Image (cartoon, rainbow, N blue to C red):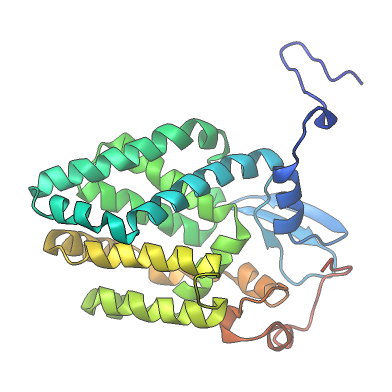
Length: 291
């Protein structure tokens, strides 16, 4: 069959030099065979023979390319703003009026969206197709920026991009859900900085600490910046308003994800247990697991 249609040109894969996105899909997606069927109703579910629960979400090389660009932009931005030599800039911003502080933040978020929105927008799912945890992430982002007075378009697009970054990437989403299983809404409302520090300690114990541990360093930078923001009374008030409006319990494992992390083979200690300990929690396993 010809690869040329009336309005479409599909360039053969062998014409391209690099296959990063294709290789990542093969690595990130746990591959199980045979697949019996799919369900596209209030979520994306892949059913596998012998498995007790379906697997959530399906990605593609094109999706991963867009997601990786957004992730790299976000991660390097966080890395830049957490450098020690950036601290003098925080002192300057600290003396600005609150509305000016918000404008500075809005400028950075608009720059992030200008870089990533066109690449990401074709892969943004309708809300009901997302995992419950990322629906809450999207709402948390939206309500925070909305309470800051950002334009509705910025609030909506930022929430969609951040939630999609997590939703499409199992390595991010499952770790996020694992830590949110440990989070306490009451503790976040009473002393948010202390609770965020406690959650980071738990994450470090399960992921592994140190500058050489990339996943831990990403999380620690995000928490550090959040704790800096919480020093300002008005930002703290906004953070507490957001915590009030979201459902922390929905950010934890769904039934399907709790089942699959028991089979996930990596060094992260989901639920504080080793892979061998997790596998003992389930009795029905899929056939032909590719490790």
